[in-house]
Image (cartoon, rainbow, N blue to C red; front, side, top):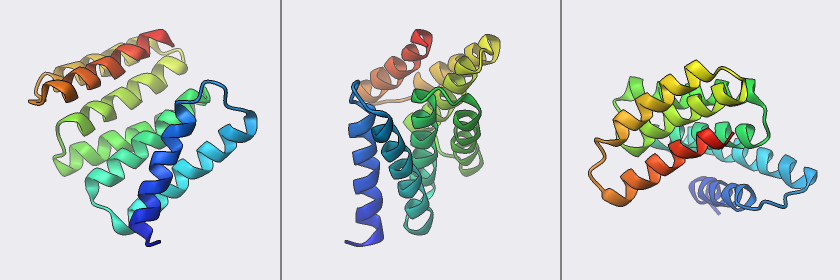
Length: 145
């Protein structure tokens, strides 16, 4: 399997763990390693969109594990990649979402709300209705934290 295929496999497998509400502590560790491994591989074989998505996924894993500082580090990185690279659409929304989610976990509600609102504003520019609704739905889950 080449590096690109492995990066994709690890990315997708990480989501399988994220979607499992009955993860064990060992599953959480495995999920974290997979997310980082996928991000590492994308740095070698991907494009800026892949970099942003992989940083977003790592941030999401840390958010699920309630590790706010690490979630914020990777969320900011995802957002920075989008802003510096002119990446728009769902990837930009998810950059804002990752930062907002991390701030919510850290108990910084005002910052969370600001980034969540910026993400929602960006989502309005997504032309594909399904993508726009998915992005807005993910932003709404921040309020559940």
